[in-house]
Amino acid sequence: MQIRNIAIIAHVDHGKTTLVDRILHATHVFRDNQETGELIMDSNDLERERGITIFSKNAAVEYKDTKINVIDTPGHSDFGGEVERVLKMADGVLLLVDAFEGPMPQTRFVLQKALQLNLKPIVVINKVDKPNCRPDEVHEAVFELFFTLDATEEQLDFPTFYGSGKNGWFNDKNEQCEDITPLLDGILKYVPAPKVAEGPLQMQITSLDYSSFLGRIAVGKVARGSIKEGQSIALMQAEGVIKRLKVKELYTFMGMGKKKAAEVMAGDICAVVGLEEFNIGDTIADIDNPEALPTISVDEPTMSMLFGINNSPFFGKDGKFVTSRHLRDRLMKETEKNLALRVEDTESADSFLVFGRGILHLGILIETMRREGFELTIGQPQVLVKEINGKKNEPFENLVVDVPSDYSGKVIDMVTRRKGEMLVMESKGQMQHL
Image 1 (tube, rainbow, N blue to C red):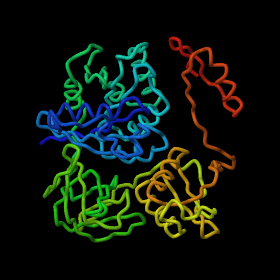
Image 2: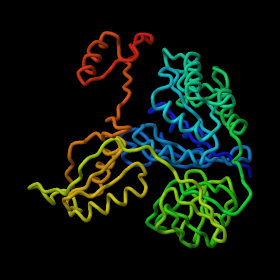
Image 3: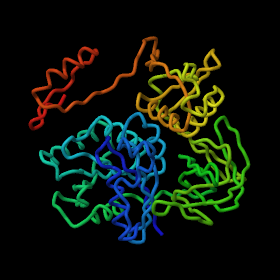
Image 4: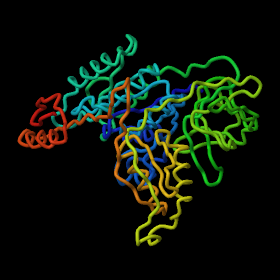
């Protein structure tokens, strides 16, 4: 069976997870009468409440005798660490762009990562049913973005699809059609099959799954060779450490779940059970001649917060984990799967410095820990200042505001008070784009 591996990337709220819903429905992953609800892939409570994707996830569908592995990714730059590592599993990307908003800062960020990895892009202009939308201008803006990101000639020749995820249609021209088959055919046509190199087994662990029944599960794409159940392998870790281990069970992705496999060939994405103590970025290699793949690099943290134990009079009222040992173990466990997070001990045994990509990144961690029953105190976020060539540098953010023109003065006033600089000001319909 042929395989296509594709990641869906876009700015926040441009319709990634809704598109995955449509793909799952179009390929009959569910029974016709099954109640599935919206945003099927956002399975975590926090994701459902906030209406955002936080963790990248895999699904696999079958279409015209081809298996398509679909990877849904988060849209916020705070979770950029998630996007960077899962792109290693893909051979092509679907770049979704909102037909009204056009390319946004995050579109640029994820596209840059994809182009650096030489992935084949397919551009999908979504939400063309919105009033005031401007698909043709957006298409030109996307082309300019590719050009500024130094795309190759081949990448600049990208196919474009138009449609509406909500209404369930995508077509290769801006005309409504029955369903999303033109897009699925496009994926088979434009996304290359995985490149398979000859040689012994190599597979990089790009994400991590956990089940209380099976323990830690390593997920990744088999780069070459094949991996079998019960096979002895060499796990190659950072700093040249090599461990000899055995594969207990193998699973491939099917629909929303996994199914057991005896052997997985190069090019497919699989989950390996039975390896304890692995880290993301490690290589599973042939035991006789182990060769490691280059490790995954992730963007640096931009801010830090002090996490400490609850030493207030209300100690022990809310949570069940209150000691510094509980806190330390939980933070260390988080760094295993949350690549962009770093934890350091401080002079006091009761508090720890936690470094992350931004407020949202650390906020989600704090909220998750609170729900698990941890009590903790947190300090104010501190921006990390870095010395580059002897000059102090601090991280900055790009702010984009679309606001009715009556209020634009107020917005400009608020931002300049916070030392913001205005770079662009233009009208889009009745809105002012800052």
